[in-house]
Length: 349
Ligand code: AQP
Image (cartoon, rainbow, N blue to C red; front, side, top):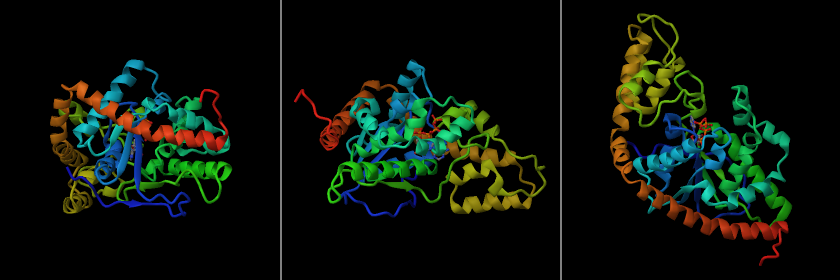
């Protein structure tokens, strides 16, 4: 499995807190089984970056509550995300992996940020608008999702946030939040929060699900990272395509199957398959079979590691516990500074 691909960090504004080192932070929701969109949009970057910088990766179970209110499922998916990261090559000696709610300071910081955030900005959030348009219930958690995300990033002094293209606007909202806090509470020459940069892979946009919409746990259109056998086959063979007959030439760039093939195939292989599409006589069924073999082979080793990890749930919990300890060691002093800056005094100390 290739570890990293060419990537660039976007965003250009000057960074007021002038961090001397890169701090990588990113979260992932335990709202379902992780899928190809999560992997190629974000997790692949997490794995590639976690040895290179100080890094915090958290399983955002508070965020998942916005769409998942089944306690057993939330608990199961939380451990499942951790197991998946370890199976994909995350090394807990190199970076921190933990559960968001094990650092409760994050919700306190979010509350402070709510009071600096215009509701009108939240209503323009693409992810919120998208989910509402899909008929999902717009609870207050969903509306406020980007504010909690800003707290998650800023509490660790995050400077670089590897995410999928769909999250670009949310990172801009985090930068706005950091800027508003600095402007409201800090002297110009001593801002508390750096403005984090998104880190979005150039070559990957939003990955489509089997129905052509964004692949998303809540849309039921995903291909799971560890799907195998009949289940994987059923999903791949069910990918929605148009009705161009087998003999006719086809445009690969308009096809969901080809969009997924591009994630796995070398440039030569992509060119070969694209040429077959354009020539005609190559059906969507042929392309789906190619894709099936590619997915199966790509995740074979990780699947093996995952089976072994499933027998060691105590080890997975230990990793999360140690990760939370390290994360709290950053979050607590940051909150002391935030409380001091905002005038939240305590009679207990
Ligand atoms: N389809 C996708 N294409 C590219 N990147 C994606 N990501 C998710 N789906 C795609 C990236 O995965 C990271 C973690 O996502 P998340 O689970 O925290 O939230 P999400 O983006 O809301 O993912 P889902 O599957 O759509 O979850 P639900 O349905 O529960 O909301 C993020 O960096 C995201 O960009």
